[in-house]
Amino acid sequence: MAAVMASMPNIGPCRTGLDTCSVCCQMYLSPGVSSKRVHPRSTTVTGQGLGKYAGCKVDAFKPAGPPRDDRSGSRRSNGSVNVQQAIPSTINSNAAEKLSLAGQKSANVPIVPDINGISLLQVGPNGSTLAGASTPDSKTKMSLNAIMAPVADDLKTLNDNLHTIVGAENPLLMAAAEQIFSAGGKRLRPAMVFLVSKATAQLAGLDSMQPQHWRLAQVIEMIHTASLIHDDVLDESDVRRGKETVHNMFGTRVAVLAGDFMFAQSSWYLANLDNLEVIKLISQVIKDFASGEIKQAMSLFDCDLTLQDYMDKSYYKTASLIAASTRSAAIFSGVSSSVCEQMYDYGLQLGLAFQVVDDILDFTQTSEQLGKPAGSDLAKGNLTAPVLFALEKEPELRDLIAGEFTDEGSLEAAIALVIRGGGIEKARQLAKEKGNLALKDLECLPQGPLRRSLEGMVDYVLERIY
Image (cartoon, rainbow, N blue to C red; front, side):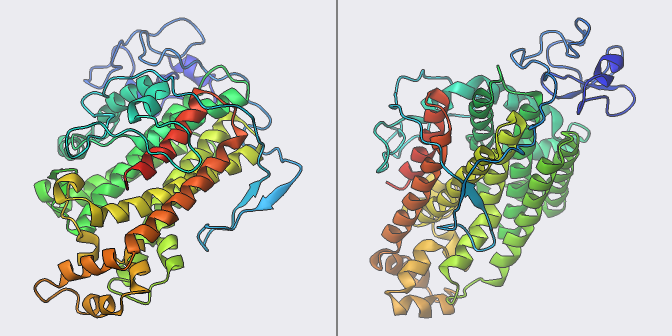
């Protein structure tokens, strides 16, 4: 096995007794080494040159062919335009000229099952299934099942492997990881990685995703999960998605260590992708998380916070990870720098829309729907888009915030003023603007199920606020 792996760039044994399956990109003990951590399907190595374990769950992934000269996306388009509209001031991003492709959308996408107990459907308050929302640019609604259909099998395998690679060396860390994984989640971020990977691979003339795409999806979900564990500690949250948080169950010490371990584990896997551009992109994300938390901590109950300050913070805490992941997926497909930039902007705009929508839901949904206390952001002094917009019309709101809601009923009064002042509606308009910009970025991709799913992802995010 070691001899086979040595001939493959970017992938190889990590230490004595460990090999990497070149198909699913997982580290497993070599055949004959006693351990529970073996390949989920077999420990038998197949024919020469494949470098994979027999019966690997992702047999569709073939070893990468000869490296392309433009693997890092170095080709440039003839023209470029500066896309500054609705982009945080901390970002200096140049999006290349959009390549318009004609075609009509189709809603004929198969329905897929749940992912190992993680529902792919969002259920409404009356038990009804919520389909994707319509935006000014969309003709057809897609359910989340339909959106996920092209990558449903990939997400199932990812979910299985996450339990294998996270905390496997320490039972306590494994238990902590299981606590947050069992809380559900739709795996939207790895789904976007898979969708962009397949769409851009198709654009580049590749038959399928590359092994690096698969590892990237794992890294992104591990980073996201680590950030959630740390966020809950900083926010002193008792529940997430209706379940007890890691720090509430195991204590702050274990939660911090579990988050640190997952960040470290993801960094190790990231380094083994052996692509400097991607390593820089994703490493910056981890730095952005810390910057976002610092910005938030320094601006609590600050009514002088500007909308641009809020957008910067939203980029650091949410959009940075999504933008870096979609761009990295395009880089591994070897498409042009123009397409890579558009995939980055797609992730950026969608990530900003996602954060604005989340902040709206803090005011419009019940505690049961949110899986955490309603109005919790405002109660802690985290002023979001609805609050900032309402402050323009409701001077009394400023006084309530300045009092930090120490008086009985003051929080409820503030929420009422946010709604009365039109903060919710203006925030909805902001989210829709971001969503439309994200849809525009997809024009470089060919029409088909993959592009429709990426468009549907935008609709799904926006649908939650109606």
